Image (cartoon, rainbow, N blue to C red; front, top):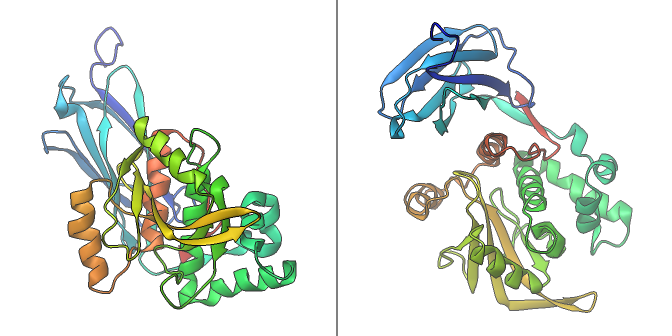
Length: 317
């Protein structure tokens, strides 16, 4: 602060959460690293509390004010966010999430019985095509034990994110008519994507969203049978990609639906996605729903949208 009490440097409140979306409470201290836009380390210290206030951060009035905030702790995976534009006039809030290195999914609040109250639209979609509610519940619940719950986490990640995407008319989730529940074959569920049948009107909605700068054309050559693809560009990371297979169709409720392949990439930049994520996937390590969970939650916090809540949490194993 200056002698007049007017802030002259940048200010930020860093809050560190864990995989339960609660403030970090482990006994291990948190190492917070703060770097300015010139890549100079401004602060690097251990802290015993989950909320840390930084003030008098150097202010340049240029790209030097695009700060990076990183958090780490023993037994946890690092997390961070960049850029955070600091300004003496406001206190920037930076919410980060640390996941335990050894962890597991907790689907207690995502069970079939609870899904209807929390996400009725999602439950109605998941029930489509089953003989009755019992069969639908069994089909859904079985995913908890499939590939260590990663497929169910992916399904909840993507449908939650799609329900937050506002198209010119409705949300992206509103256009899905039925999920394809295959666990083998070309349309098999995986830990990084699933397949569904969508109202073809979704394509024109995506085109309009692209014209409004909310989506961009995305490469679809790595998606066998795909005819076009659109990628959300709202966040720096963990944007939804909607890939359409227009040659695959199925009549549902009088609508000649097309097959859609939604997924979430780590990176917004196509070059980074192709070089980093696709290369990793080619070596046998698909996009991890745990990483998507963290990135999407942090990105949503920075964007000021309702909390990303796929109902499950991630806890220490």
